Each structure stands twice: as C-alpha cells, then as structure tokens.
Length: 375
Image (cartoon, rainbow, N blue to C red; front, top):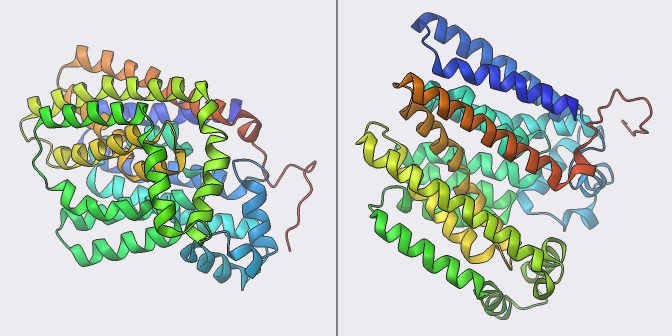
C-alpha cells in the first residue's frame, strides 16, 4: 500500500503547480517534463506488474495460451490485439507494455491537448478514480478511444468520431452507447430538465426497471446467442443474485447521493462561468447522460451500468474546471484545493478497498518469490 501512497503524494505535488502562478516559459517546462515523468512512472507500473490487479488469470491465460478457445471470451477488436502481439512474443510483460501504452497515452494526449491549465489535476483524479490505467483491462482501452473520439466531436468531424467509437466498441461492447455522444455534446438542455430526468431515472432504477429491460433484450437477442450468454455471465459475476442483495441497494444509494452533491456544484460553475470554459457545457451533457444510465441500471444490472463509464469519465474534467473556477480567489482556492485532495484520497481509498486483496501488495516482475513464464 505504501507504493500507492507515495505515488498519490507525487501526483498531489504535481497538481499543486496548476494553482500557483508560474511564468509562461516555466509553466511550459513544468508541463513538458512533468508529463513525461508522470507518464513514465504510470506506464512503468502498468507494464511491470505481475499477478496484481483484477482479472489477471483470465487475461494472462488468454494471451499465454492464445487459441480460438480463449478468443471467444473477448470482443473481436481485443482478440486482434492479442493475436498481433502473440505472433511476435509470448512474453506477457511485452503485451502489458503495449496495451498500457495505448490506454495511458491516448488519455494523456487528450489531457495535454485540451486542458493544459489543469493537466496535473486531471492525472491525480485519473489515478484516484481509475488507478490511472495501471491495472487496465479492455474497457480501459475502449474508454481511451471514446475519450480520444471526443476530439472529433469538438472539431465536428463525425466520420472520424464514428470510426474511433466503432474501434472502442470492437474492444468492449459497453462503448456502443457513445455513438450518441456526438448529438448529446451539442444539445441545449436546461438545468431543470436534467434534475427531472435524474429524479425519474433514480425512481425507475429503484423499482428495478433494469431487470425488465434485460428480459426484453434477451428475448430479442435469444438466450442462446453469444451476446445473450455474455450478458448472463456478466450478470452472475457482477451481481450474484440481484433479488437478494440488500448491500447493493446501499451502494447504489451512496453512488446516487455522491452524484446529487456534485451535480448542483457543476451547474453552479456552469452558470457562473458564463461560457468562459468552452468545453464545460458539452462535458456536462455527457456526464449527465452517464448519470442517467447509472441511475437506471447500477442497482440491478452492473453490466449495463458499465455503459455509463465513458460518459462518467468527464466527472474528472468537471472537477478540474471547478477547481480552476475558484483559482482567482486565493482563499477559496486553498479551501477548495484541500477539499479536492480529501475527496481524491477518499475516492482512491474506496478504489483500492474494492478489490484490496488483488491490488495490495503491488507485485512486479522483479519479485523473485513469484513464479513467472516469460517465453
């Protein structure tokens, strides 16, 4: 655990540079060197890990013993990546290096291109929310592609946007709903409507509309079909027996509460900033759609709620904008900065504890006590 804490502190120190005045030339130097440093550290952790993180066995076995039998467990785009690397080597660390490079570099490139003003804050939040893709699985790469596709929403290039979302969906099917992001980003939706939609979604989520929708979809797909079977497998793994899980309701309500605290804050910043943040409204639209998906499905169908993650990723951008909004007032900025640090630590602590035995301790390829096949 000490490894993760040290890394958290390092990212906090970098993020503080976003909120102190620095001469433009020095700021460029900090951004350049800091981005290389943080990327290298995170990529190294992701590439050199061994038997650490979720789904290790299934991913390792699928790569090391790659065959058609294993290939059917994954989406075709991910199988192509597995097959391509496997043609050159059976060294799983090489695969992790390539895979994590794609995941992290795509996100870093978007952070750097569009948000130099709070670049290191995004990395800290990226670490606190998603472990900075150190333990990336195929959905992490799919989300990197959907985030990168947002460039083509901003530039109004629907063909390139469609191409990247198609690639993301071929790696993890949960990304398919991001096709609607092009329209949603540019939509004009009042704050009242967002509140109404959110309240209705929570109400429907609590009464279990997810189960009803699942039944309809499985009937349409056919329970014996590949997608139908995949949904059932995910449902068993993620939810166990949905009808008997009181703990799920508590977790769901905690998630709803957190979001209903953040949403008014983001709306306040959106209204008060008066268009100063050119991407804020589009990000907020995407974030709210992610919340609606979460409210509808998170209690009963965690696999469906995964479709909300590419949209909910924009929460870290909205927090970054909120921090930047208070930057002009030094007293408020200091208070908000420390609140953000506490929030980030709480979020990160919850992330680690969600699968503590899989994350702690961090094991690397240099741990001689761990048996490895490297051929």
